[in-house]
Image (cartoon, rainbow, N blue to C red; front, side):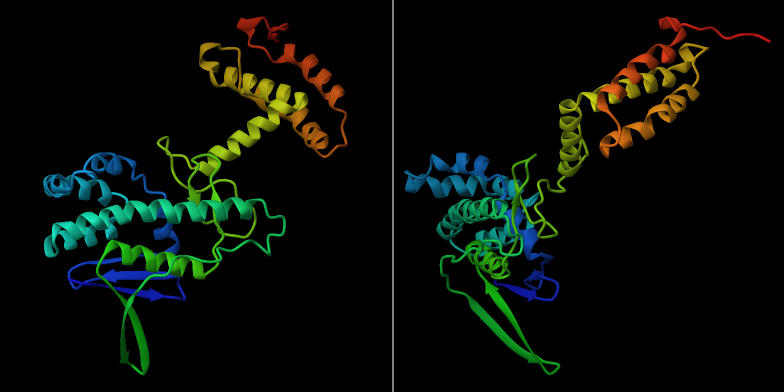
Length: 304
């Protein structure tokens, strides 16, 4: 059974359907999902059968359900095409198409990686390098006329056709591609501005962009002695105030008192209007006045 691949150029989206199945996504998201898919586990499982022609088809028959399950979580449309192909075609064609899948992931991903590197090195963000050519391929197109409008769709019979058509549409729009400096995966930034981190969520339920911003902030703090001592003291005072239940003489007002002393000055320092050495000395002088009593604070409450 063939699939119909319909493109919505205005939304840069597509729909894949065959009467029983329908899947929609944007072309950008789908291409990035395909080229960043970790095919290594599947390649390792199937590689040893490459030199054993008689055995590789038996292996595929025995393991096709496991292969489909691995693919399904990340590439549901690819999985549907392979499932349909396995049921309706001979096993040899299905096996060859799986190897084509691995090849396309590597080749298309490699082209986009090179493009991303060249674009990141380009100073003129309005004249970014483009992918000049991609391999040619054959495509079947169905044309129908309805509601005074000519409609086109691609007829898909294999994973190879599906990926080639999506990659062609992706490249024809002259995409901007970047490599995330946290997860090292390709992504399409939202603007032409140089973007270093993607929006993927990590196992800790934070995005690469959030991790990148935190690392950048920490690097800046470590490189600046004024900001470093400011953050250390700010964190220390905040922590002992949060633990005030353990020390009946500590109050959270101390934290705000300390911020009132130094927040304005740190802003002036960042703007270049306050001396850094002077600010360090002032922070050190005030440290003893913002210690927990149990740590040796040098004054006591007076009763009136």
